[in-house]
Image 1 (cartoon, helix red, strand yellow):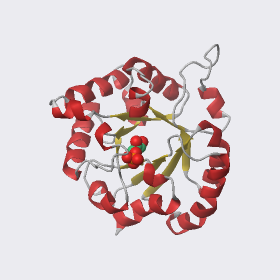
Image 2 (cartoon, rainbow, N blue to C red):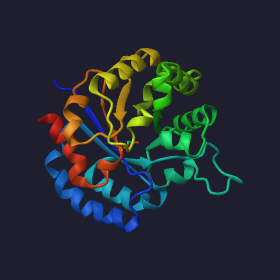
Image 3 (cartoon, rainbow, N blue to C red):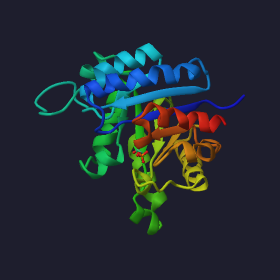
Length: 249
Ligand code: 13P
């Protein structure tokens, strides 16, 4: 039996409320032929303000949906933040945590990210935990040291059951939005190494960084890559779903 593929789209700061409604006008018929494929799990992660139309469209199509960030406290004086109970009322089940843009542009630390991962798990939700090295870190030979720090700080205090619930996304910073994809061997090397470090053969590990139809097959065919976290190519239904159809061939 072929493996299950996770095709997750991270819209980042794109798609307004009305653009999200429009997205589903095209997505719903395009997804129809893939609906019911037990080897495919599609998920979309939208800005907070688009979560309502996303939830409606996602429920109609039976796909996973979620947010791109959350704060770890339940409520209080945290101006500008969104809490887990707020997202629960939208039936959100999955939340991206520790995306490289959160780490590098908004300076989220490993410590804050670890608290978010724990809070999401405590709420019975699934963190899509992102990690990955910058170009400078790769070129100076520090790829694995950096990732070990990022991964360990997030999972070290968790139970094996909690560690298993997390969906991991290896996203090399130099491959995000640059059109420069990691080679299948580079991505596989890190994902296989991550699986060992995580200590869970059944961990779900995605690759993210300039994934598109033209490179999907070779990346998703790698043994330790369970799917893709897609940025740019997820904004249009055709380029998003093409990633899976190209993989299936
Ligand atoms: P791109 O697919 O646009 O490179 O983005 C990857 C990413 O950051 C997904 O979270």
